Image (cartoon, rainbow, N blue to C red; front, side, top):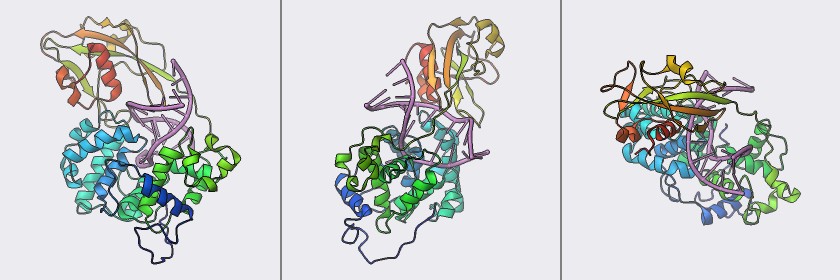
Length: 372
DNA sequence: CAGCCGTGGCG
DNA sequence: TCGCCAAGGCT
């Protein structure tokens, strides 16, 4: 990701015209000034952007929809108003607040990054590509997005929206991901040196509301006259993508164990890998094989000597690269808890745990009610 | 560098 | 119901 440096022309930074009017960036900025979306992390025109909020929103928005991120962003900002606050937080509190958002490595890197910014950069985010890329969780896209949106520097932030818009605008029919370099070159050629932050956000809005993956609303598009795919009638077919491999199915048996107080047994997952560092219901290994029998599963049970009762039905959950089918069994432990690595949690307190959605589903099924 | 890494919504 | 996709990064 290269920061473009273009010749300056002395036009006021808060205006798209006069020299940009008619140009593609100018048309997009004029459209943005009329149709920009109001989002929790978006600042008003002329308002100084807070790099912390820009960074936090960009991390949360990685592969995650605007609607999903909204409440999480507000909660994080409420609990940790500055990067120094977040750096001082316990990682487990961050994981608990992140629970349900997915891609949990983002939460661990988020905390690492906050610590690094607080300790090594005096609580201020670097405003250079090199400085941003050196931070955990910040890659080419996020570095460019922060440079553009937080610091109003010309940078090419390539995400799914921009790839789609560029593929259509230029009728690039070669499939992703091979076409990424071509699409990036097209995008970089358009980034203006005035209002690059607004331009970048405008491109996101365009991709989200006009140049949508399906049923693009070309009639409303400020770039319609210039769009090569529209002229060819192939806008909705782009961008082309190489076929994805089918997802295998993994199965397991989950042990929903309660003690005499009604507390539920959980475990913490290993720090790395799938659902890293999050809490889980004890299960048999997740394997691409027929559902394990109750007898064969006994060695994996969290406690010995429990009279396990299988529940009817199957809990299904889709991960990025496999389907997961879980058979739930329930059991009652004598007395109050026990078991080496087990953590006993009252049902009312489950909502405060770092529970991934798949584990909340299993508990909802096994306990026969919703989580608070 | 291709595989790994969550979840929810929508047509 | 089902496949696709979302403001990607890490290894």
